[in-house]
Amino acid sequence: MRPATAAAAAVTTILGVGAATVAAGRYASDAALGAPSPRPFPGDRRLTVHATAAGQVTLTRSFPALRPGTYGLTGRDVHAVVGPVVEQQPHGSGASAATVVRRLERVNLGSLKPGTRVRLTPELHRGDPHAALGLGYKETEIPGELGALPAWFVPGARDTWVITVHGLGTTREHPLNVLGFLHGQQFPVLDLAYRGDPGAPRSPDGLAHLGESEWRDLDAAIRYAVRYGAENVIVHGWSTGASMALHAAVNSALRDRIRGLVLDSPVLDWKTTLRALASARGVPSALMPLAVRAAQGQTGLYGARLLDTSVPTALHVPTLIFHGPDDTLAPWQQSREFAARRPDLVTLHPVPEAPHGAMWNADPAGYEEALRRFLTPLM
Image (cartoon, rainbow, N blue to C red; front, side, top):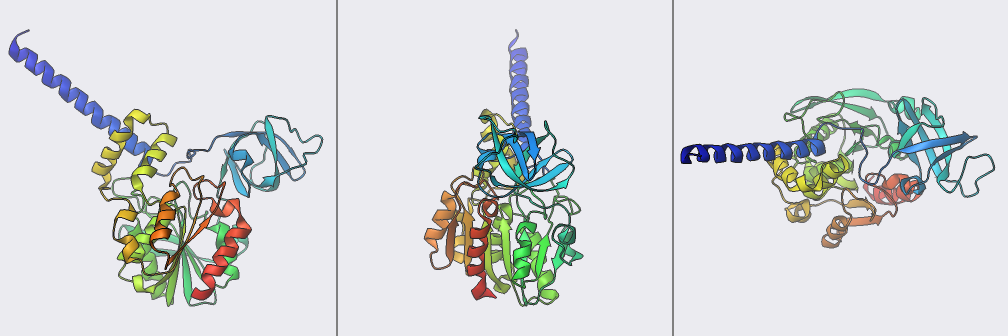
């Protein structure tokens, strides 16, 4: 081969490999940060319904199926709520060494039939606050930088509002888990949908930014609350919603109106969470470094983990963190570090045997009692 031809071939090969590498990285990044997906997170697996009986359902035995607490059970055209594992499994329940029987609380949608494929979800409810809980509410729109943001507003007697912000893999139906409790404490509650959610504006690049840009939608919700009567606000966020809360507490022009933060499974290290999301969605481990670099290039996620920024030092409000060692998306060691660095403001409530974003589900009574104690001085 002539030298010029060989050089051209080599350049073409290098360019081809480079293009393939870029494409692979973008594929991995899009898989992790693309539009919300019903695909499961790490540790989740699809289960089969083997049988149902009065107030019980028999599922494939697995670690998720044996988790303590109360969960949604979701599949194609079906949604139900299951309670704890039934210790004494009656005759005719369909139980065996390969199955587990859980209490069946209710079926919200469709029907559970043998052979139905389902998975556990932290979302117990379907529909709006009235349909799910019988609570009066107002469907409202919050002016955001990208357009109108849908929100549910449930009125209450207090002049301190709670703004709830869901996280990864869920919608504004997730905060309905605690809405009844908050309403019982007489807090007005603003349950926010933000960029990328159904009915909300699309993110300009179509990707999630794990709270680093989405927090500005929360900032818009704080402005809305103050405009319509809130003297102060408490932000209760899950997952990336918790990260948004931390950004707002430090960066919002109205940060002095924030009286407290409740953080459930906070994402404090975006690289760790991105890798976990990519893995959950089928990205090979060899592509993980490419996924991180592609995410940086596509989204501008160049920032360090939140613990390595000014956030811990600049935090000025009481903060309650719910987190546990079984979270594979946002490791709880970082929440422990956060609490250790700011013992004057941050309280960590550990929740064992709970997956990401499901700290309430694992122990509803314990969660609500810790929440009540935290909120009482802020009322």
